[in-house]
Length: 114
Length: 110
Image (cartoon, rainbow over all chains, first blue to last red; front, side):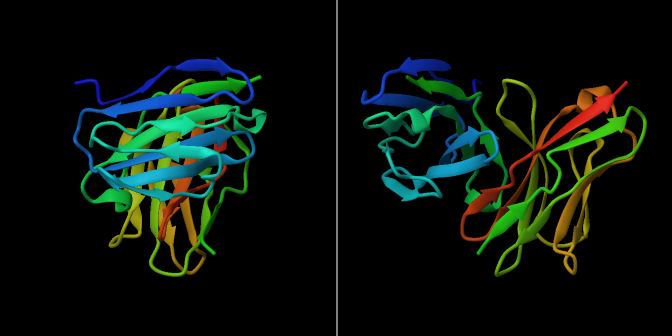
């Protein structure tokens, strides 16, 4: 049972390119989340999803797009990457009680935009 | 507006001593509060949560947290620190969305 996985673990891309970060969970959790972690800012919510085909904005959604066609996958796309999007990205999921309950985090993707 | 504050960027504690990592919050309704720990190059791991009930919440690895409504605080505590407790600790609060604090780096000195 792999739990929650993210790919790639490391990515270097150029300004203006599109990049997609993948997140997959094996628990059938209904809620999934994307965060970015930056020094001095802690963890900030980008987008979250309550179920397949249901997504909502978090604190810092600009420049990002998400989709959730299947319960187990929640990809995050940077449509035109900028240097300010250099960060560590974490995906998380939680059980049917959703954002009232604890979240399970993936190992993270370190993204560098040059 | 909902907010979470961790006033200390870093806390240093000698091994065997008690430790406290501070967290204060601001929400409009009833607070749902969480502590998470992050080890190097890893995702966050859940430690404990307060939803309702007893003000003293016990969690993983011997940690506990005390909810204080009058002081709007939810400090993380452990009676005797271990070197392996050295990590980054995040407090989080859920109102309509989850907000994380900026994190406190805990150094346990041997």
